[in-house]
Each structure stands twice: as structure tokens, then as C-alpha cells.
Image (tube, rainbow, N blue to C red; front, side, top):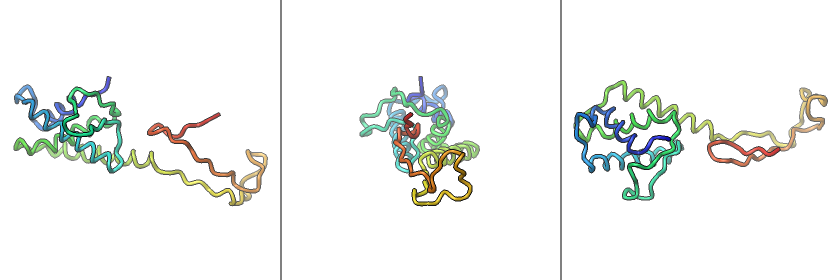
Length: 162
């Protein structure tokens, strides 16, 4: 079972120094933090950082107890960035270590998402195979094999048929 939106919100408050065992969090504060979480993830989604977070159609449709299906590598980055967003509303600042870790984690997620979604360049079928392509290796044609257009299956990659 993955993290729920409530788990991210509560961990974000803890990271901001507003732990629920010290500060009594009201339902409005939790709902406002949820809206900030949803908008942050929508912004990330717009730039290509898609980690499985379910975006609501409107702020009123979001549920704190909804499971997120976020990949494990993104947990820490999400709640640290959320802490940076919610802390000023309570007159708090997060530690420099949290800011650095959140920045590095976001850059790692962004790099991972961009490199996984980069199109693979294929050589045209009119390009000569050249002297390095010997007939006994795999292919006995004078030209490079025709390009193959993969069928994408989402974040998992292309579908391969046997």
C-alpha cells in the first residue's frame, strides 16, 4: 500500500517543524495544505515530472485519504517541497538542509523523467551499412535496417512483440 495524500501532508508539516503532536492541526489547515500539494503536483506534471500522483479535477474533489500510487523514489522530494510551500503560512522557515535536499531531489526527478521520455534517434533505411557491418554478424543487407516505431506503454517503456 502506497502513501495517501494525508501522509504527504502530515509529513510536510513535520518537515516544516509543525508536527501534529506539538501543533493541533485543524481540518482547514489540512485542506489548505492538500490544495497546495495538489497544485504543486499539477505544476510538476506540466513540466514533465509525472510520478503517478492522481490530480483532482477541482480543489473540492481532492480527498486526503486517497492513495497516490507515487513511485517510492519521489516520497521524500514531495513532502520536502510541500514543507517549503506551507511553512511561510505559519511564520516558519525550513532548514537549509531541507531546502537543499528538496532542490536536489526535484532535479533528480526532473532528470529521470526527461531522460526516460526522450525519443530514440534511429538512422534512416537509406544509410549504407558500411564496412563495419559484416554479413555474418546479423544482417546481410547493404543498408541499415529500417527504423522501428515503438508502441509506448506509458512510463514503463515500449511494448515489444515476439
